[in-house]
Image (cartoon, rainbow, N blue to C red):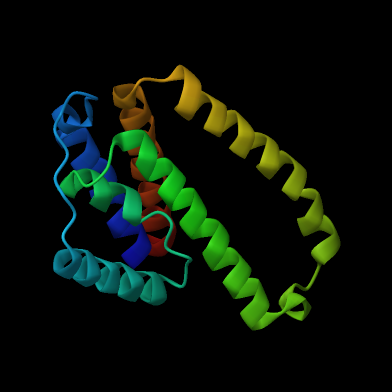
Amino acid sequence: MVLGAALMSAGILLILRARWQADGVAMRKCQWPPALAVGAVLGFLSGLAGIGGGDFPCPVLYAFRWVKPKTTGGIAAGFIVLNSIAGLAGTGWQTLTHPGPLLWLTVPAVAGALLGTHLGARRWSSVTFSRVLACVLVFAGGKLLLEAAS
């Protein structure tokens, strides 16, 4: 429920603050104390939700206007990869009960990631990127909330 609420809130925030997603909007300088506090809160929420937390940085970086919209996608992707590697290293491959079928999911996942990266980096404007991300966050958050309610 924590993750669903966070994703849903982040998506709605992105929709409501669409004017900030324009390429011409001035970015704010990221100060260390607030960034550390935000990182601690995001880490806490990630721990509560039991996820790597790559979904949390994008909306926060948008809200504070610390980086351009497209840059947040790369930051979140790197965050997810590092956390996934750390999770696998920490729990080990033995926790995967059926690694064979899961490994086959890697191919379409990588293909989807490459397509998304191409569209986000080369084809879409920052506004389009922000809107698509907002829709994905609202959909994912809503789905998680519906599953938790049933």
